[in-house]
Length: 317
Length: 317
Image (cartoon, rainbow over all chains, first blue to last red; front, side, top):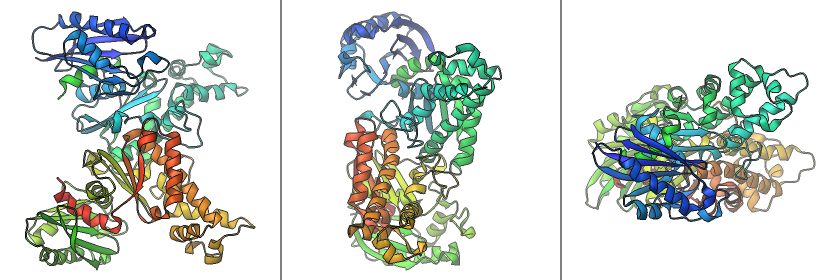
């Protein structure tokens, strides 16, 4: 049985796991990232996890260390182009630095791509030729897999499915453009639509009782919780979010004709209301035959997708 | 030198060519399609072209016959799913029918995909890892190539880049959805924007002199000709068309990070005004680094792309 170590380098925590070739996590650990201490300190923390995880292996070959990292990076060279708000990370040679310390092959990939790879390998996209993963959170990340390979594009900057334009007259997006899928269906877009409804005089909602006049307290999670209790405002916001997400999925269905679209991330936990509205939009508006066969399903691996996908960089071929 | 026969099966004419492995057309011919006579009659016309073209080969192996056909089809089976308005073509086994008649291997592919393959093989996308072709005409077709392979998706229905949604509040599209790229930048969308301007009282334009009050006489070609003469209405319509096209290209750039986007078809002949506006939109709004490196270029092979691409199905591997 072959093994690899998967590292999910997040803004808050570094998760590490020993993963076998069946995609099972045999051991895992987590430490705070403390990215403000600079990349060399973070590399040391990653490197210290490796022997601990490796010691848990019950024999079998150790193929190396896969790292999923946020933001734009170059998987061929294993360098980070940048980390938002952290200047010391610019053009940082993550792969070389870790290889020096751990004496194992190191592979680096975008974290959303790792999650897509994990879901295609042993999650909701198993055995599928074309799969698309969207991670719905503050932003919308994603990855596209065709025949088990990530669509990487030039300079490895492809797969930014959160930044397809669904309405060029839409709200401003964090990327500078207007009307991206992320501007409508990222956390801020969802919260803004809910807030607009709450501001209308006479609106009755659990959400108003929960947050009062504090817009900053409003989150997609609160909206999901209110929807579960049958709150009308929350339900209509999630239904509209699902429909708008569906508009983006129509474009992706027409471009890729995927067998499956996998929705992960915190916002996807809103569940049935969101999924049903997205599915209806795709069924009504994607071109046949894709409108009938594209499945829209929740991610299966949850918080472990990053670690499993990072290990899959070495194990899944 | 290896050769293949490329057939471009169009709604009006069937074009055939003898093509060598350098992508050169050594001989060509053209006959009317007369699709209303039914698929068997059309197959006979295609089959009769084959020995004539084959006779022009100056030695070398004949690999077979590639056919580019419109509409949804299954390249694996070589069957046409349907031809718009022609019921007799439903689920027609084009590949088997032609193979029976010509005793050569036959390969069938979507015509827009053939054009994309041709441009990547010996046209505007040579030597490129990721290329996207859009054919701008009555509709907007297209094909996406990654590492020289067409993105086919499930049931081979991928690559419908004309049906990405750029504004869900936009005009109705022929596909039934609203706000597709094709609804804005297909012939009808362009003509409608020009007509709106011409209807405004006091508008001065060569176009009004040319067509009077006959909207049906207005075409993208007339608009391009008027723009070349400096007509203000025509120029502003083409500029807006380029910008809207650019909105769609931003989505495609963010998804695929292609090295090159190739624009073919009649509307692309509008030239610089259209291209400049599309390039500006991509430069301003696609994510870095793609916003800087994605090249937007005219197709190089013109009307021959279909024949060359159909032959490339056999020759380009």
